[in-house]
Length: 497
Image (cartoon, rainbow, N blue to C red; front, side):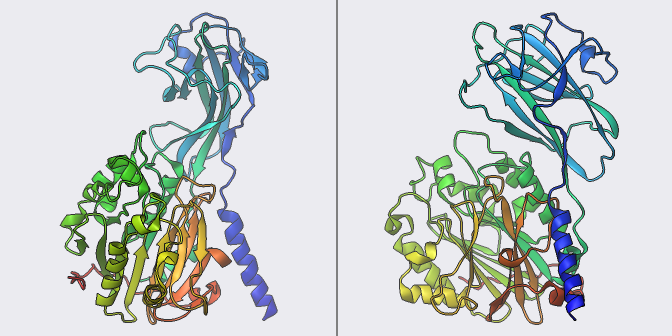
């Protein structure tokens, strides 16, 4: 028996080890490049793989004219760089990303095709083209990451990455440049995850705080990829899905992509208020995000008259998920205003109207952290006894909350959802729904990994509906037979009128 348990533990440890992001960096920071700073223009052929750069100099980055540059560059308008690297296989590569250290203008090419330009004007670039305005950071050098999910032409074997760095000789007293090139490899999910997917009658995800990032962000790309891979029926958001004063590619994603447009349930939080209103404290002004997914036109959704809070119902395979979205912005700081009495009473009223059975899963969400603590004791008791999942956000870090002063293994499971692409612990909650008996497995899937994995200990919980909370014994869970192939979702009847 001990031998069998050791094998199980070894297999699980191997799951974790193999799923950590593999080393995918093909050009390291501060590596050696061929470069030419002769002050003369080159023909366009210099970016091609067969160009002869044998007479170019070769030195290590960082390049520039600052005091700490590893290789000093001449004060010419344009310096050309080329770097050769080899890749054995392009299988499972879903994108590339560049880490660029820059205080100049740059155009980057891969195998003769432009893949990125920074601080440079649109249109044709020639030797004399001046960079656009550059933010000066003479005392703070930081690599900026750029993810490119398509439009690149990486190939098996030898590849050439090239860059032309443009500096304004009269203005750029401190020019610097360095570049790291990596690929995003996403492995096929391990057998354990595939087995869990087949056991579940369905699955869904909860994500937050992506700050407007869309699929151009590699963490959001993984989140989207894994949601589709698992066949999630719907996605619940917990706010801060937009960011003021910068592009928000997440908005066209949820407006035009069928999965996100038809099956995403956003939360209105401070980020939304700031984007559409005066500031974060402009209560409820972020409601237009609901229009991006045409939420009011879904038959299974009831939006309050305040236009920013709502109830929704998802039913699949006879198991209902009741979604209660509340508005609690980080600002103003006074909870009596930010999470007002009307919202608190609305929560109680909705809970009262749900006739809870073992096939009813209640999910309650409000953006600002451990918001449950703002409820009085009787309201808190009702919420913790009836809800199954309670979610907050704000901190951008995954955390389990324990609000019950009695047995932490009973009542509702409560979490801070973390953040996608906006945290050192980037990730999202993935929920598998199982039946006979009805229960949910909740895991925090970290997007630093190269695939979804069976999470361990504090990152995975099993909750029996109307029953106890435990850790997950994966050996026991995965011994069960797979669920029947899910049928088409039934037409839902609203329980809240």
